[in-house]
Amino acid sequence: MIWIVYIAKFAFFLFALAVLAPLLTWVERKQSAVMQDRIGANRASIFGMRALGLFHALADVLKLFTKEFFIPRGAQKLIFLLAPCISIFFALLGFAVIPHADSLIVAGQSYAMQIVAADVGILFFFAVLSMAVYGVILGGWASNNNYAMLGGMRASAQMISYEVALGVSLIGVILVYGSVDLLEISRAQGELWFGFLPQWGIFVQPLAFFIFMTAGIAETKRIPFDAPEGESEIVGYFIEYSGMGFGMYFLTDFIETILIASMTVIFFLGGFQIPYLQADGLHIPGLMPLLFPDTVVLGVFQLNNLIVTLLQFAAFIFKVAVVIFLMMTIRWTLPRFRYDQIMNLGWKMLLPLSLVNIIVTAVVLYWLR
Image (cartoon, rainbow, N blue to C red; front, side, top):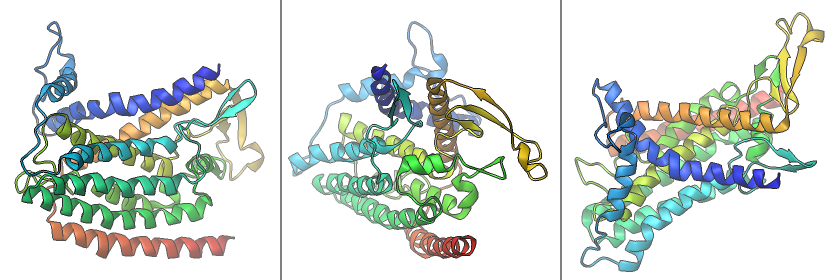
């Protein structure tokens, strides 16, 4: 039974890397096609089967693996090779502390559904996020190309700027739930107000949710915050990369999208929590808990711990998919912001609002407690 724990942890990591990230290339194409009244990707096929264009993701991978990896003249060869590896490594490292379900009990022993059970998960998340900028700026600098360097400088300034608002917005969440452990934050959101309303972060910290989502999209460097790439202007920090060098940068953007969506779910959408589902089964809340406080719980459907864990895992993946859908919708709805607009939004709007949110949260908690 202990192998179930390791298989579940490895399956989550493999799902994020080998399945969901390439699948997002198909989602992006198809979702944009639906929004623009087009057909979208549907040409790649295997034995005549097109599967709604799903094979395009596989075709992209094969194409990138077979393309020549070209190193431009004058480039810093070692750093040029390492830069995309740095980007994708730290993007993947962020998944180590994500709890995709509550603890699984095997033979009377509890196992956390995290690759690494760290009690400083938020600090680890920001440490990893801050290191990702090195892969971008080093790739632009090592390319010996002015446009690549300009894209790298744009990306580094943007990522550092929005990390401030991203971090400050979560202080309110820490104040409310009293922990920096991602697992404990997810568990705390399973509590109910008045016996029926989940204490999800989006209800207790609505302003922080919008700030975090906005700053998170900016961290992924995707539209409307794709000034570091700017295909119609400078192409970006990866302009000199080809083959899997470009592929790793391209895949990093999608992995970061999954990471930001996962963190949004953990902090604001209850994490793996399903309303009324507890460790021992499904609790049925009373219809009138305010009028009849003695009948808040009318009954409990007993469920096996393994079934509860699988349901929580499925709920987490579903919530992440919903957030990714929202991010993709924003990506195909809004035009690219000017770079001065991006900086003004980060420093003059999101950061002051984050500080106001901290003050209001602290005052309300002091008044309640």
